[in-house]
Image 1 (cartoon, rainbow, N blue to C red):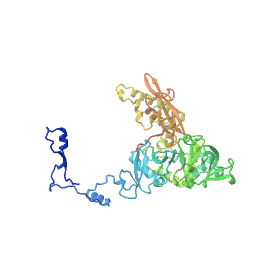
Image 2 (image 1 turned 90 degrees about the vertical axis):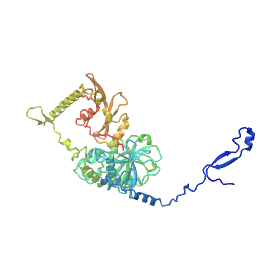
Image 3 (image 1 turned 120 degrees about the vertical axis):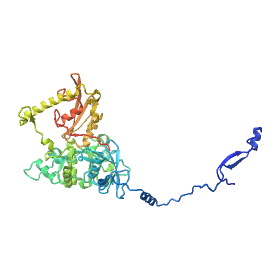
Image 4 (image 1 turned 135 degrees about the horizontal axis):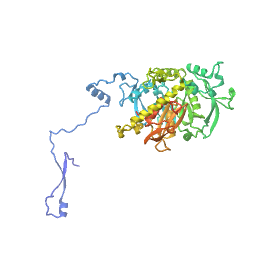
Length: 523
């Protein structure tokens, strides 16, 4: 076989003889290959380049030739948490993915000993959040419907190491106002009916004093009560009497008997985590929505390892889950709580011993109607009357301001609520309750949403005493103008923003003032 060098083209000999017949032309034509460009020694052909196996050396030589760029943020170089799309220079950093409530995620580079509190602090700075505290990392298992708030001292990588590689477990960054609420309002979280009789060791001490003393010492009273438990490998639920003590969780095999021969050991508190269960009726056929579960903390989550329990109401579930945390972590939770109080809070202000902020404690009723100057109103009835009168005068001033002819109708604040963090659009009643529950069942947590049953109406969802209540906000016309009201026209507001601002300083028909907006965090 002949080798042909260089570029080539097809040339048909005799192709210029046009008079020949087609048969003669086809018969006499031969195919030859002729080079288009003759070989020349001046032409340099590409040669193969030897690629060394050690590519790291090549990277080092390249980076060494590039001038170094100064670090514009030197104060972040010593942080145990780094947020970047490229790994840090040190080899001991690990990446975790954190999701916001808008389903978007951000990669975070953390050191092996970085805690949940440190990771939250860096995410707060990155997301430009207005305050530093009440943020939390949630461990979420979407398929199983499990959620757990990480404690501030927990090491993030140790928690992630217990996850299954094939699962959909993730971290979520969100608000949580109720993380230490049981330190502020212990009687709301630990009702007397659930405290074990054996816990009252100090005679002459009330239940409130007993609970406060136990919490200050980093422990918890023994809890007892009925819970629905899902039987293994069956869909049936059984009502069982449980006891939660320092030594572990026990169940009674005979009613509510406490005799040792009737007690059955269920779980060790040091080796378990407690999760709240979302959508438990659909996923597990639970008799109520107030479901939680316990599982070994050092093993990947498997359905057969879950101990699913169901309470009768939210207060009962919160009591059990809070007691689990206190018995497991003890004084560490007390230290975490003290650190959260000492940290700066830009929006909410520092808290006093009774749970109120300094700004709330310094508010007094004043009367400036006289010529001699203002006076402090001592009579509570007179103070309430002055509050109502000031509210009426304030509404009249706001209504007059918005009815001025020079106000551009295109910028009237009729839809200004859509830009507020507390407005959640068309979420359902059940979804609103879940959002408030996730960010903490504390008094004053609220959001506003569109009403799904009444056109052009809104609903104010407010948390009070571990329950979410819903108030209908309806449009109301007065003097040819459109207002909003929650009390059949007795109190009118020109928009939802004015309604929220009013109820942040006045209860009105609500059981508590609006304090904490339920917000969705976007990373």
